[in-house]
Length: 337
Image (tube, rainbow, N blue to C red; front, side):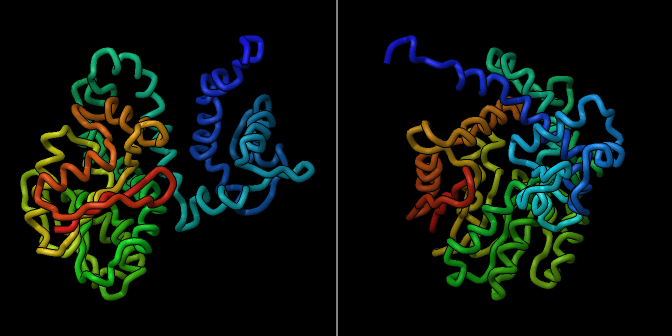
């Protein structure tokens, strides 16, 4: 292939990728998909409902059609099956808290990626003397958005884990850093014999209990308030750490895996899941970008490969480890004691 055959199309598409992203994020912020869940609307009516100026509205809606987020039939706009299912705030399957968090926080912070790469320092609230988790957990509204965003992020993987892991071999489980309880709920719904719950810091408790109660599971899933660095982990047959290890530096990662090893019985298991990077570090773009997100969001966090995590587990004493694909870019690393 000669130079005359090269095309800049891929470079240009990636360079402008934030355009499409922001169109979707603003759509969620405006409640567009929730409004269209009530029924198809023409451009003028939809703009009136959303209080949008007519100048950019039609281009906005048609951009969403082109991006595959809306359907236009004649002059009427409607949701796609996916956006109707996942982005209607009135449905329990709503995952919009995740793009809401991207829109409210990460879209701004990622604008400082170059500075993060040059300095190795976070570019979020920490930059101005604050702290990521203090900023989130001190504001009840932001906390609820964040915790629900974590449910949205984990939903597909939780359902896949419920199918793939041999839960029939175990009786109890605990989710460490459980947020509002999205993963424990999905596991408990799929396996009636299991009991357990989740551990997180005290402000999370009422949100967890409300969420779990909405599924009728308060008798089987309980909340344990605690700090997984300072406190012992709950004793259970299986411990789960989802989207936890990547927040911390290597020493902290190893310490948490060691505490999990001490908490599970012989034959028990630790499940670590997140956007595990492929061992060749070539294919899982989501995992690599998430690791850059940890550069922006944390003091020392980073994502890692399945081989990395398996090695850490074996060093802690787990006799057997394996990696299994979950949903989308996520996988789980399982260690058996």
